[in-house]
Amino acid sequence: LSLLLKNSRMNSLLTPLLYASIDLTSWDIILRCLETLAMEPDACAFGRDRAAFVKALIIRQPKTRRPWYCLEETVTATLVPSIRRMVNLRHFSCRAGFDCSSDLLYIIATRSSQSLRSIDLRISNGMPSQLHMMCEPSIFKFRSSSLRNLHTLKLSVPDWSFPLQNVFVRNLIHSCSESLK
Image (cartoon, rainbow, N blue to C red):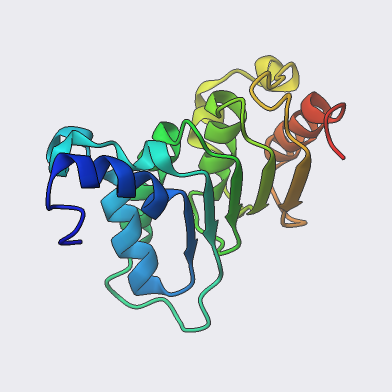
């Protein structure tokens, strides 16, 4: 950290390397890293948008129970805006089963970068909040143009999920089926 704060030249050289690939495995690290990535660029040292440097984000299911201070609202408030700013994201994996995972899938499906190649996501039993605002016929017509370069798609969807969420997932798979390997 002190080397990154030494001067702007060191920061510009090392920050992209530091944030290129992030693999999170414990609740404390997940929470702290997401808070760091969610910071607006003007609040960061040298005005760097750290989320824009992320090429691979892997959030594994921690082996311990979620602590009391790691609230779902905190995760949602930090992860969702960060994903929107990850313009260079190539691989996204989240096996932690956050309640916001349906929203994450919607954001990735509609606003992801063209460089995204791989998604591995465990979807919770919740409807994306954006789908609540859409009328039913538009959900049935939904096609994602953002994922045309996707090679790998691994989704874990609960058997008891909402019918409209199933339609959304089915249309998403259909949208990127030609590029999947």
